[in-house]
Image (cartoon, rainbow, N blue to C red; front, side, top):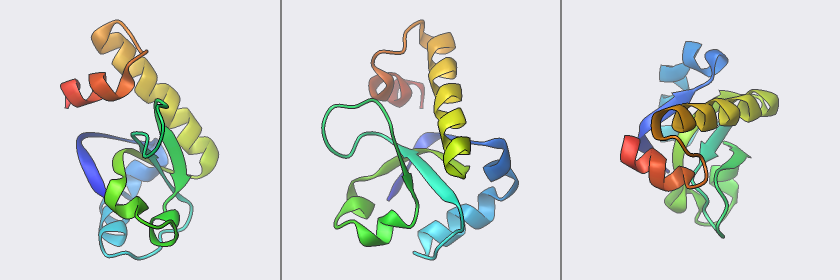
Length: 105
């Protein structure tokens, strides 16, 4: 998995940021970790999935580009809202998130 140059962390994940990044880089589990990524398939905006799926979904670790990390699913959903709000404030739109996030990063 790759990390985008601009990455958002939920408040909970920010407190454990370094440990979370290190664990994921080493392929180790991190309890309750969820990632927000650009779409790995199809034409969605952003995807949320538990970090443990990196080891269990064939090829996901090679395709995923993370733009956010959270602890817990609800925390991840709130983080997606924050990402959309931040992009909207920066660009004035939120209908092409991947393109806009890549430009901001």
